[in-house]
Length: 512
Image 1 (tube, rainbow, N blue to C red):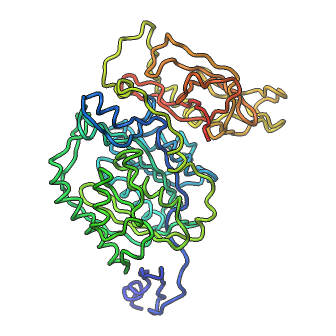
Image 2: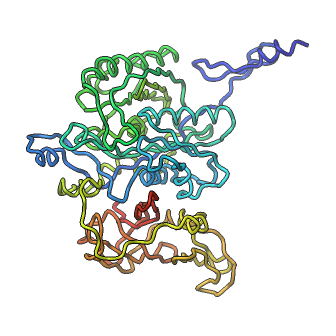
Image 3: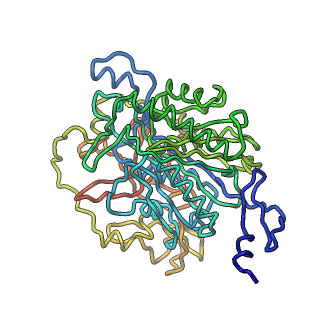
């Protein structure tokens, strides 16, 4: 028997109608229904927005259209990824996911796996495969396609992709006004797919229009026309045309096209240059959120999915030292997607940042007077490890005898031994509080504590369904705080010391 010939005939080929199997005799078998694509989606846009006119005024310049999303002082790539992932996983068990990929150009750590911190905060299984995709604006598309490959290969059933960025532009420059903060999350799998990935096309070229070296705080940019003429106009159109030819499609076959750009005027020009009509071009978010870097194409994609109908085709084109173009086809399962904040919900929940000076303060770009109180103790790596399976994902316990939830927190332990209600000893099961809402039992404002957003608000939260805990409060107007107000949990950075970002959960007002 010629095993070489037999194995060559047992193959999969991709046709426009899907995957078809050839048997060992070279005969076409029954068309398979397995497809890989997006199972769920989510997004996160920070609560605070800074009008570009405020930035322009600070530097004595006129104008400034639109606004940009500004992450709070206690937010970063990791915390925004956790928020987007929670939005995406609504109705999905984190422990059922096989891998988590983080894509970003602004990872808090150069040597420590940032994606593992996110997985820990989400309460995912210890056995999952985590990976960081970084250093390129195309990182989000790279992570998405790698997740598809993992599912296609059978090494994972579901992969969670989070992409998040908060890049900085130098003061008084165009980047300072244009760069915004945000995140998106996509769950990739082969069951319950709402948007099938039909094909992709990649161009890799080391055309450098923006970059940051190892010790750069701000994004550097080359002459604008160079990136536009040699990069955007040529490569985006080439990648889009390449994937359309590969999939046997034309511009009129797409309901929406989502692609990276740096401002809304250029975004419209690039869309027309690729041969698409104005109604096919998905809102760029550049006037309302800003250029969110690696996250931008997938955030735009989430916006398109929120409005998509079965049968719609969506084209996504990323940018950064080349392009990735991806074709997706929306399925009937899109009708079953539950409630998400997504892009629409987050755009409606916002508060103007009242001053440019506060923005500088939040980004650590001005030196503040040292606190008149003793500093916080440095993070203990051994303590962090001891409680990493309970404190980081905010797990408490639920009594198996009477059903009472209990959250036990102090400086040394997060473990409870005795039920507060029925006094049963060591009769508990795991109970997650991070996805529960609650009400303020009491609160206080501390105007003396050193804070990037004074006053510091300390609260006691009674969780819906039972359980109580003490937390700092974020994204609040001190005047809106009232006993009984509804709150939800948010993963934030508590402080930074000696190269360590200390994360934990805070509460924030529930605004939807």
